[in-house]
Image (cartoon, rainbow, N blue to C red; front, top):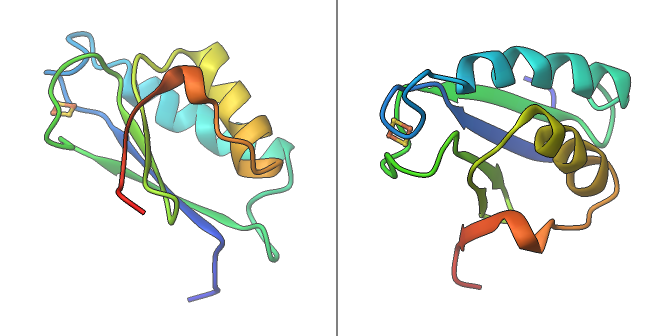
Length: 103
Ligand code: FES
């Protein structure tokens, strides 16, 4: 497998977002990663969908590793900002973070 810089997990389950909005976000993420040239090379981002990330509220929920940053209430507009500002440019969107791993 090719190395990658970050791994993004999106919950596509129905408890944190009753209408399972994570599913459409997961599809949108692929398009945004392609648009921002993040599918190949040293900034490559791997994406995965998960049936549940154990939060089950305030979703859709997504997590970005290796930073261990968890975002909640992710809308398509917020996802676009996360891709551009965090995944491409390396700046965490603090206002949308609800949990992070301890350093
Ligand atoms: S269903 Fe999304 S975190 Fe559990």
